[in-house]
Amino acid sequence: MFPLTEENKHVAQLLFGTGTCPRCIFRFCGVDFHAPYKHSYEELLNDIQKFLKAEKDELILEVPNPPLKKIRLQELEDGIDNPSQNGENKISVIEDGSIASPNSNLNVNVCNVCLGILQEFCEKEFIKKVCQKVEASGFEFTNLVFSVSFPPQLSVREHAAWLLVKQEMGKQSLSLGRNDIVQLKEAYKWITYPLFSEELGVPIDGKSLFEVSVVFAHPETVGDCHFLGKILPDCFKPAKNKQSVFTRMAVMKALNKIKEEDFRKQFPCPPNSPKAVCTVLEIECAHGAVFVAGRYNKYSRNLPQTPWIIDGERKLESSVEELISDHLLTVFKAESFNFSSSGREDVDVRTLGNAQMLTPSTRFCFMTGCVLPGRPFAIELVNPHRVHFTSQEIKELQQKINKSSNKIQVRDLQLVSREAIGHMKEGEEEKTKTYSALIWTNKVIQKKDIEFLNDIKTPATLKSLYMETLGEPGQTLAL
Image (cartoon, rainbow, N blue to C red):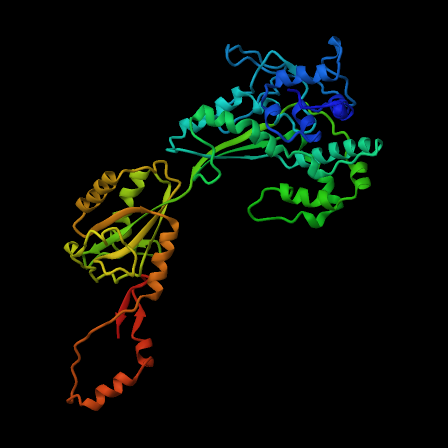
């Protein structure tokens, strides 16, 4: 069912006549239910032309700033190579240019508001190309979160279109607030989420650790935001990790501050129609970190816990961290890792324990507060491509680590949550240690000497009992 009514006809005619696409017209008319947006662009274009009673020879309406050429959509299913007149309308793709513009026999103008986002980039052909990139990435996932990044000038163009519609509706004693417009990102998700889910065979889940992100750009209109920087320079502050001061947040801040009359003087309302659609800068896949924890015993007196490197020179050939993490990196196909443990021992100190001390009720407890052999450790695996393992596979991985070296042994290896790592560090802070020592003296120790020592709660001399030595963090030498 077509969502627009006679009350919307004037706004629809105004926007359509200035080069706005059907889906953006829906947004400005406040259509906030999903179904109408999901029809193919060709269907929507035909429907809105019928709604506006367009004549057969007016399929492409005249606009104040007509584009120099039209976007030609190719027919991907037939594999027909039918490029545009000079090739400028091809969608650029990450490094290899393998994602091309979706195609059709339909000739349409590029939307002057969304710059083609709700035209070509919502169609099944484009979704399939993105999914091919996802499947080729090699990540293992059972759900995903999808994110998009639009060029900031889209906010400027939407603001211009809003002022145009607001002015026309004001003539009819009607109002249109900015919040009455359906956000571009929301409409895009309504259309694409079901398509991605169907194509990949997994649900879209906002809490998923696996993220697919698409970044769009539009070089042709990158200067649309620059006038805001001249009028409201305080809104645009350089940032270390940003290539441009014209971020989406900065642009939105400026649009909230600028006066309507000042905006109209600097930017056309309606916005001009562009020559080409947006380009795809990149399609990225990433998986959130997973955590593996356990306990280790160290049997060597010549093995540091972490790599021992001074001034770029390695002092010892290996470490506890490396003997464990090298295997995990390979199996999880992770990009990098972060090692942490509950405390540390000196390079020449062993960490011993008897595995037979474990009971079924405590076997999978690795945190400090538990009286178990071995030192608790955890490894954060960054951007792992494989994340699902059976208990048997984890057991086999532990055995592989233990067989690879006689310097360490690992037990209770398991996948844990980020919160569990926090508990491990909390236990480290709360843990108390008891030391025993054999002391030789020149005189006989009297009972009063023992009482004197017992009365000292925080002996000042014990505070300087250890000092850092040999350049290794945590390496100590008794004084």
